[in-house]
Image (cartoon, rainbow, N blue to C red):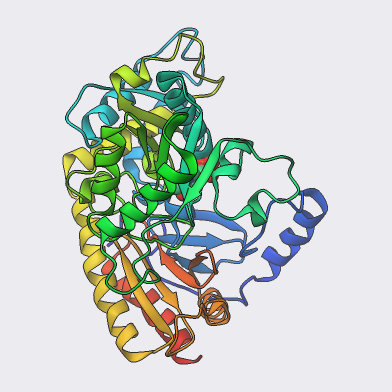
Length: 444
Ligand SMILES: *Cc1c(COP(=O)(O)O)cnc(C)c1O
């Protein structure tokens, strides 16, 4: 039995992409800028739970959630009802002109459920990049300093400031004009690739040495870190790394910003990934992707005195915290609060980690299994080495797509497969998808 209008099962009825998708893709190539990539040109008509239905009637299992966005599940009943009710009542006023309640409600939720036992405030935007960019503005205004420290392998967005903060200049920044200044990259804790036995504290000290020696404290406003790196391939820093970093920022009056755009909102089996390490106390959080079941909304949440350092009118934007998107966010946040959602992410971790570790034992092309909750990944290597193996990932991804399973690659070396299923996925569907992926690995 399913609460959704399509059965939660995989169904491949044509080649993927099928003829209708191919025809649509021809139109797209004429009409849409090449700058927007096309990882899998299968045109989706509907999506329910964890199933994507394409134009040719194929049903794909979604292991990507549009990159961690439809965490609550496609067409979640609570979200659909909230959006339908809101869209018929009020679609826009501009919050900073004439406000409305659900914007405030989203902020109250985020102030309550982000880590940190101190008075918090929030402000809403549309995208993850906008949240990151505004968090930096807020930190600069509060400290009256400019410097930004970010980490190797990090991803923060595609606006001028945020692409300058990304580790990969290619493809995000190349040719798009001068990068923003006052940004320094420092080494991340990457347990699979760090010297064997390096502790989290040692990795933090390595980063801190870079900060102190290369950047200095004089003009340093903030340190921005993804507590689990997303595009990097779900790099989970060694235990102690985040806490040590946070002790250092606190001792030195530097604003610590946790970019939880991908890892936040129940994804990792906690409200936020920052909850997993005791003593890690970010001052500000950036939140987006999974917060509103697919509707565009983002937030910066954090210490009230830092958030309030900005003058009225300095933060905002026409669409930021739009009432329909805010209604969807409230619907998602209420369900998480009511219980069961975070628990489901943990159950998915149990299934994924058991299956993926069994594959790692069997196939020497898998070098590492990592992640938390419904945010797990496998890193592919040339057997017996640590050399990245992108070719293997490309083949497994292609095999999975042809067989109706949507998986995403990731990683600085594109040698990681990441799993971000909607939490609405059934155990049976998850196992079916993993069977397909395993068959692809076995065929290498
Ligand atoms: C996706 C992402 C962003 C950018 O979000 P957009 O909504 O695409 O602008 C920023 N930070 C992290 C960690 C992300 O995963």
